[in-house]
Length: 176
Image 1 (cartoon, helix red, strand yellow):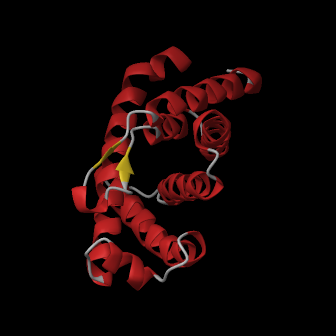
Image 2: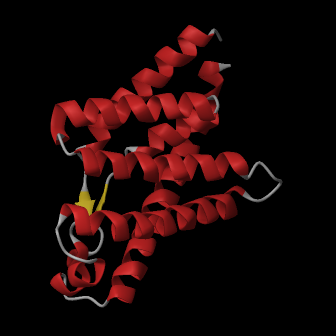
């Protein structure tokens, strides 16, 4: 398959994943700002179909289109970009002969840690309160908020990876 067709397909997957971003819902009612959407599954499928660079192109397409179409929120889009980039990067690094579900778990846990650190940095800037104050605002301890963020990312990215893998298996012959 030519590079132009691959990039066209990657762009289409990125644009389609914007539509999936509209299917969002909170997993934890007490942390309603953490919303699950299945958009990463198309980026993950792009990784499985092609390679890391192509998946990053799909991700950039998705987040740029989403920023201009719906969001306008540079911080939210940036955090989404970093989360998905972290996930696909960890999956790419773990090309070892490890079961894919272990890779999915390790990558999702890595995203959870990255997002805890990002929230600790962003919350004081975005909400003008410390991470601890934000936790109290939601009626949580800081540790409970940390565990919630990690748990959310485990659920989100393992689900997206399984769905992305299923989609990949269904469409891989089309791209051969």
